[in-house]
Length: 400
Image 1 (spheres, rainbow, N blue to C red):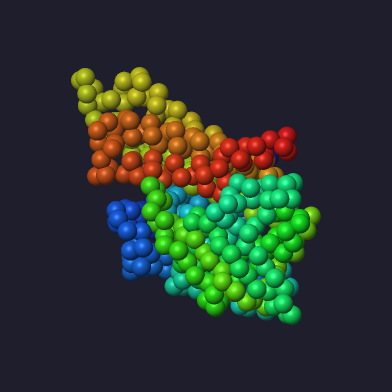
Image 2: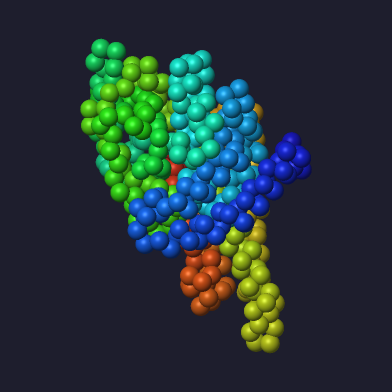
């Protein structure tokens, strides 16, 4: 059975995340959230100063093997940390989550490829600047949710990879929603090798961010998670060694795609729990001190009901996610339907209850002087992160 008692290691790393989040991340994210031009955010010394401290503390390499310089933490422990970081800096946390995708996939898929480990994994673990953050390029302007459409041979990635001698040449564009797209030092790119196979005709490639022919679009101007860089990425005759193809096209493609979203969606779910906690704790304090009709508004039944339902959603979401992480620990990458179910449940709850916490603060709730309006803006984005909830539910239902 799952044990809810934390180990000493878990207590220590969560306490570190809480102290760092409260003292450094939260005030920085608040300041960066108010910058009008997102390009200024990712050019700012403040953004990179905080990111470098994340790397110094090891939050970028939590799940990577100790043999390569990672911390080797299990999925349940990393989930606890994602929740805590989401409580204080959801935008920064959302940057770190996909930020290790290149070293994580290389460690999992090709751990014996010492050339790739030396080029991408060890330097990532050794980095203390935060500049070696990475990204996953799958979605395209015309291929969003269709990325899970494995059956229709007419649906394929338009970004192509053509083998010429001992090199691949990549051409195409990935959509505005590539997390860390504009700042990544390396990418995992899904590119079509055989159009006749549809989406299954795509292979996975690791591409250095400084390769000739790569360009990036402007960071998109979003309602929430404004410290998460998201931008398009373009490939114009980008040449990479043939050995940088790390997963071949073919019938096994869905296995890789599903493994990524099985792990990734759990992280998004923990972020949702952190956001709910932030909004709940802010609203609870307010409701116990705000007096109307002769008593603290916490003592009014409708107010208490909203607070209780938010607390209930936090506890239920966390337990669901813990099960998903436990399954991932038993057998990597875990159970797809459980991970997707936990993510959908947690993010739906977060969108609902952060909005209700805004309601409890009344006019103060919609003022930018108070943080709850930001939590509500941030939570809304989680329902479409790593796949829209509608598509994820449809995908998970096939596994019932």
